[in-house]
Every structure is written in structure tokens, then in C-alpha cells.
Image 1 (cartoon, each protein chain N blue to C red):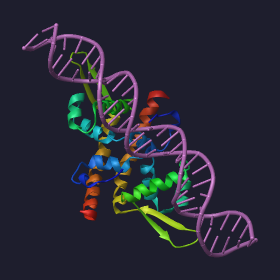
Image 2 (image 1 turned 180 degrees about the horizontal axis):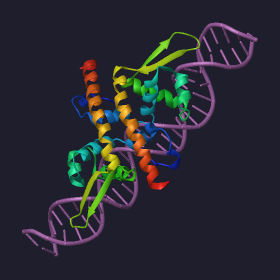
Image 3 (image 1 turned 120 degrees about the horizontal axis):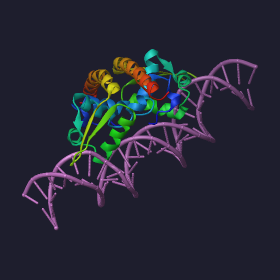
Image 4 (image 1 turned 90 degrees about the vertical axis):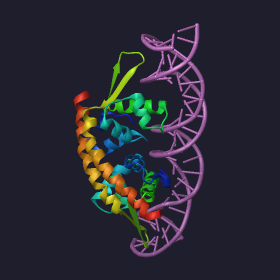
Length: 113
Length: 113
DNA sequence: CCCGACAGTATCTATTTAGATACTATGTAT
DNA sequence: ATACATAGTATCTAAATAGATACTGTCGGG
């Protein structure tokens, strides 16, 4: 998950794979692509991961520059997550991924349902 | 990596994430998208993974229906790998991924080079 | 009779990633 | 004084993924 210098000038595919690896990155980006969300709201969209896992995934995405984290100095705390510029650009990939994902699901149905 | 039945009708994003997880899936699909290749040829394109790792990755992609494996009954053995129909459709995603990956690499350069 | 080419397999280990569970801080409302 | 809401952290364990290394089978050529 580390992005070292020797990555520069290197294959866009391997770069993308590194950034997207992990079990939740794509769906988190999808949700944040719809709108900026607070931590709790995002968690309610994703009931299958625990709080600590979600925190870790968000930190990784933030380290990789895909999302931004805005802390409001309040109590109880308020933290908003949103896509960064490069994260917003990723929405084009998400769109193709959605089309393809649905086609893929169709092929599964044909095979064994 | 298992694709169970309860996946049907489910989110295209999580489905896509499952299929793409792993360190090499995207780049393997990219290479096979250019042309059908034998095992050895593919391995020469990807000098950073060992033979056993490549075999495993290919098996997973095959199980998930993304690629096809054609065995020629010869000696020495000849096995050709190619994209399946749904694998060919994935090329649209790859195209967007390449655009985005390059943009991403640019943002990295801006930051710390 | 031995060697090399090709595409593997079989084990074992290491690394990476995810998850479970319990705990924290603080201002406001009761 | 106590409880609640929010967004965490800290540990520890489990599961998934990748990699290293050594071994296999068979035909043809030398």
C-alpha cells in the first residue's frame, strides 16, 4: 500500500491496483462520490464493516490522496469525508465499473441460477 | 475471493472489488487484453511475480470467469490464456483506469518530486 | 542416455489486510 | 452526578494473499 518514489513514471495499472486494493476502497469512493459524509453516516451506509476497519480504510484512502478529511472543532466531534480532486476524477472509473459489474452479475446468473 | 449466491442482485461495486482484489489482476487483464498469450510469454511481461504466484492469479481469474485457458495437447505443453467475453468487456474499465492512473501519477509528482 | 523446453504442482513461510473487542475524550442535556 | 453522542484508539487475533523453493512429466534433439 506504500507509494514509493520508484513508482513514478511507472504503469498506471499497477498504480491503480495499489490504490484500489483492499476490500472496501471502491465502495467507499462510490458513497463519497454521491456526497460528502460524516463518519457515522458513512458507517450506516456500510453496515458490514466495523468502526475500526472503516477508520483504517479511510486513513489509507486519505494517505493515498483520494479523499479529504475535515475536522470541525466541536463536541461531540464532527468529521467530514469527501473526495479529493483526484478522487472526483475517479468517478469516471466508477461509472464504467458499475456498468461492467452489472454485466458481470448477469453472466453469473446465466451460469448457475 | 469466493463468489457465493448471495452476491446476486448485489452491488456491482462490491462485486467488482472482489474480482479485482489481489495484487496482479488488473495488469494481467491488461496484458491479455492486448493479445492472447502463452504462460511463458505472459510471465516475461511480468517479471516481478514468480511462476507459482502467476499460476495462482491466473487460476483465480479463470474461476471468476474473466479469462479462458486453452490447453493444446502437445509436448512440451502449450497453454494459451485469453480474455473471456466478460473479460473483453472489462477493457472499457481498463481504459478509464489507465487515464485515471496517469492523472494520479501526475498528482504524486506535483507533491513530492 | 541425458538435456532442455514448457507449464505446471507441492509445501512452507511471510506479509498484508481485516475484524473483534474494549477503551477514550468532552461538552451538553437531564 | 450521570448519561449520551461522535469519532475515534489500542490490542490482539484471524484470514487472506503472496512468495520462495524445490520438484514433476514428456517428447525430441544431440
